[in-house]
Length: 203
Image (cartoon, rainbow, N blue to C red; front, side):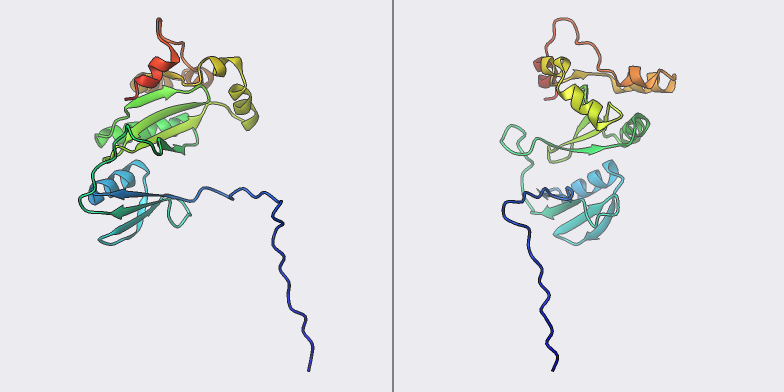
């Protein structure tokens, strides 16, 4: 009889901090199952990987699902003035992709309620049928170091909110070949306005 030593598999020490490997998905409860499923399928250019009368799972990449919907008939839409998650954000590779998505969604009657250049990102905020906010964005800097530098700059300290913009005007400037650095640069604050005016304009 051979003695076989058991395989040991030590766990990380409790003193070792481990961050998640990635953000996987989020889940929404809804009373508007069909509307919500179609809205997210359209906005995220997602595919439905599973659906029955109570659950819908969607993905737009190699993750098995990035969003799940739970159908609860009669559930009221979210009150945006209550505590909870403010928004979920999705990043695109470049400004052309973001503006192309804006134009595609506009053709479906889906318009942003808050287009804003945060300095660190150029963003478009949308509301889903249940009043949940979704941000579509791109980074305004090429490297993490540049982004981090802006976060620690005086400019960001003075305006951590950003400045709103007209997405149609940004599309026109993009198509006219305006240099990318000029397109991504945060616009000047309108005369007489403050960052908090920009924040209040999203409501």
